[in-house]
Image (tube, rainbow, N blue to C red):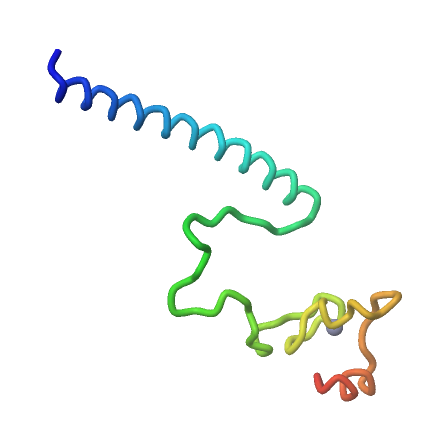
Length: 100
Ligand SMILES: [Zn+2]
């Protein structure tokens, strides 16, 4: 076997090792994300640096938010995080928060 053949064989081994290691790591990540989802946390795996091209990563457009507590658009449940008991905002509370 000449040197070139040896190098090629090593490259093949490296590729296979990397592939297997990646597959194993992905399986662990997928299992962990499944656990998180089942616990009620919406996580997903993103390849690369996670940047969405042309778009901001965070949804900062208030018109696209929907609050399941008030059943209205314009804000989301995060607006209720300071409430002790999560309940619908009154009209006054909405106005106070600039959400009305
Ligand atoms: Zn609300």
